[in-house]
Length: 403
Image 1 (cartoon, one colour):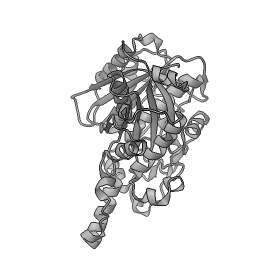
Image 2 (cartoon, rainbow, N blue to C red):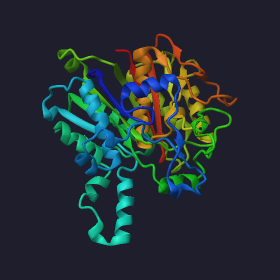
Image 3 (spheres, rainbow, N blue to C red):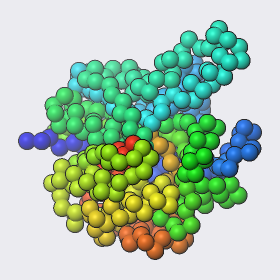
Image 4 (cartoon, one colour):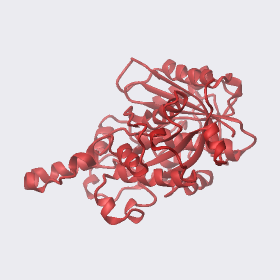
């Protein structure tokens, strides 16, 4: 019999708050973490807005520790420590504890900054910590060392699906009997001129520099691209009977996951691949489409991407669920986005409230979904599905049910 998987710990640091409770409160209040970026290097950029962290890691981590980490590692550690404490710091055999934290690019900021030092001052200016700070597995590795995890430390790198894939992989480790507890999530921190220039050249970023807080507008007819953000979210997953034996609080159950690949285009998405991920997640959870009460959409605020997802949700699930999209507030956290979306989805079930989509002034008439507008929607929600899709055709859907 497949063991049930409980979510017992939550942690986050995002453009909306320095922890999970403040992030969730800001989502329900409809706040925005998007602002004009104070970086003189962006003066001539078409997009000069972003969603930086609400609380700088330097204000949380000890100075010496922070200096030895890339920013992506800092946010992962902050979120993981919060999630571990929220779970009650489980007493678990280290050989039964695993870590899975995904990222899109890892320590890219370290790579770029150290290259600048190499170019300006030669090899002796380069930090001896460059490689451990830039490697993509750094966030997961540091969290694994912190917690003493010996059942495996893993790093899915699947673009913007990475965080959700990490949570799905964590559930699989428990189901396969390889771990009793898994710390899983996603982290990204790459608000740097190079990715901003690259995304801008690809014409995927919003250019509403004069009105940053209204720039990210999923499903709105006037959407013009996404806003790059940074942050992390981490959950503690436990075999349900293990959690019960220690009388742990359960925020929700992770009931199923579905992962597919499009084999279609490096940046374009195939809506059928997205729909297959949702169907697989529901089949894995043993639930029919009619059981879904809430959908947290990937919805980045791009003209094509949002419409593709709207059609795939309608095809795989139907038009009945309440649909939200919190990137309207956080911006797009790339490798951390799927984990933040999962957090919002499971909290909607736990608390019986769905955040409204910010900036949804004029819904795209081609989107037929039941979008939550204006105010959060309250009710009795038993099942939520969270989507995360990434460049390369990576599709991940997670299903959470009430604990």
